Length: 189
Image 1 (tube, rainbow, N blue to C red):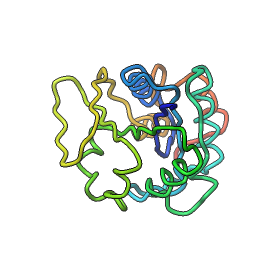
Image 2 (cartoon, rainbow, N blue to C red):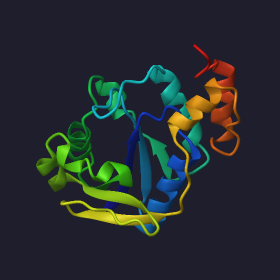
Image 3 (cartoon, one colour):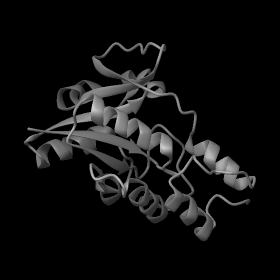
């Protein structure tokens, strides 16, 4: 049976922190692959102003150099609100010989009880909580905990840096950084 990690997000933009987390979980759980799933309209965040095509293209560029990373467009193709339950249900039905592991940051673990159809979701997928060394994740649900090195970067930080003319060097894959410049993404409004 294959073991696939799922890493969802707006990826607005995808950064080296996303790649680091995916790589760490890939090795820690001996996964076969990690699929990056750009959301269409995430229920837990404000909608993004960046169009879907740009986010998808940047995500493809970000994972391109890693042979066990792939992009899955299921949420973009489905459109509407990107509930994890709908995504995982569809994947479980389509890939019946696969175990799925949903990777999430430690900050999301505390919100797990509020997730859409969480009780049913727990029967379909194993949750992986990424934690920082020395920081304990608290959750009423069973989660697999994986420690990762601390790398303080976020998509918000990057968007703010671009908007203010700051450096994003060593925060983004170079191809993504070039794409943002060429397309004029996150510029001053």
